[in-house]
Length: 171
Image (tube, rainbow, N blue to C red; front, side, top):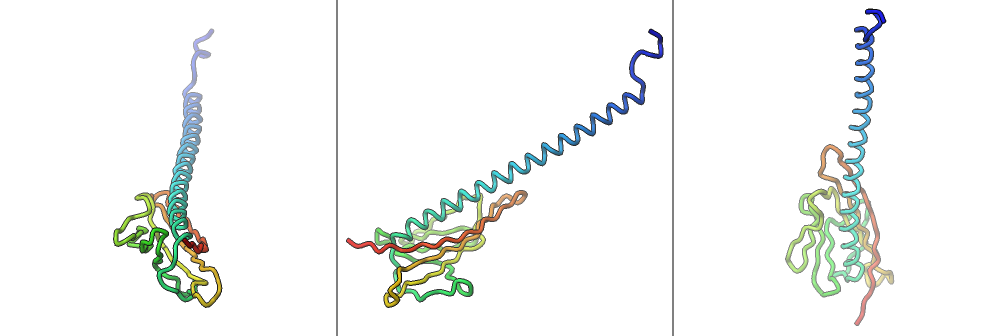
């Protein structure tokens, strides 16, 4: 072998470094993007789980409750109720309302926050229909909620609406 055929030239070395750096940047950006997507999916899952838990808890209690007063039907689009008062199956007055961004359940004068510290309620409204004794309808309550994650980088908002029909329980 001659002296000129051994090793790499400067140009070959620079080209290989450039190719390696380009491939490393592409792989790094794909990794960062997939990590961001994974965090967003985790944030969405936490928000949906919390929304589901809070709403299911409210639904179970409201379904077997009675209304403390006969309410007139509300215009859900124009004037929904900001809070809902019920008498639960144990005979305790329960009021659901928002305090800032927390959903509060007041049972017998004792407040309790229903949502976790990873989410905040942006909206909570109630619509009532069929609550008048003279209308011969089963009372229905519609819950409208907008729940947002507190993580600002991958923020998720879950909008939900559900309608519950009250069951008439008798002894």
